[in-house]
Image (cartoon, rainbow, N blue to C red):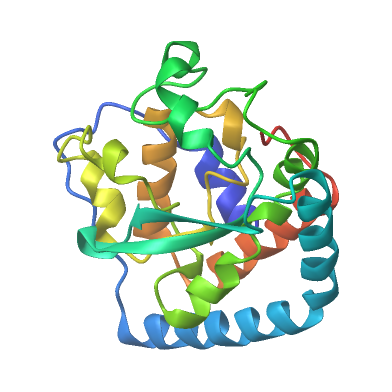
Amino acid sequence: MAKSSSAASNFQFGHSHQRVIVNDSKGYLIMKRLLDICGAIIGLVCLSWLFLVVAILIKLEDPKGPIIFKQVRVGKDGKEFYMYKFRSMVTNAEEFLGSLLHLNETTGAMFKMKDDPRVTKIGRFIRKTSIDELPQLWNVLKGEMSLVGPRPPLPREVAQYTEYDKQRLFVTPGCTGLWQVSGRSNVGFEEMVELDLIYIRERSFLYDIGIIFKTIKIMIRPNSAY
């Protein structure tokens, strides 16, 4: 865990011509996949009661909309897949995005808005606590995502990536990662890329465990996520 804190505080810019070296050792990848499978199964079983409660609250606030929101994301090597989340916005949220882009509060190929009018009341709570991300355990079980890794971007975001930024796509995306435990919504796009590339270079089984424990701590005591 200490390792991730150190890496997060020491990242630097100015390496746009450097190619990241991926830690892809066979032993690590086997251990990582076993951790993903066991973690996803345990999470889905133990948190089934929470899934039910959140589903009921979402339906009570907006009966006509779906409980689960699925969205096309870009995974390892540019492969697209559907990522699952608890719906935290109004049903037709995507239709209003264009009118809000000028209010973007982050940098680069991402959209973040603290007081996004599209977010529902229950949506604000599950976003703050990251509960909205829990359905991604199913993506992990399917092998489309890992428990730990860079967040999977949207296709429209990847269209704006430089070749340097695209190195984020060298590994399987994750439910949580170094970015999420290092400030999340207060971290700009360039900083997020640097944090992801630090993770890709330095990732190991113990590194992943450390990030998972830090993520659990943040879910219990929410940070600046929105």
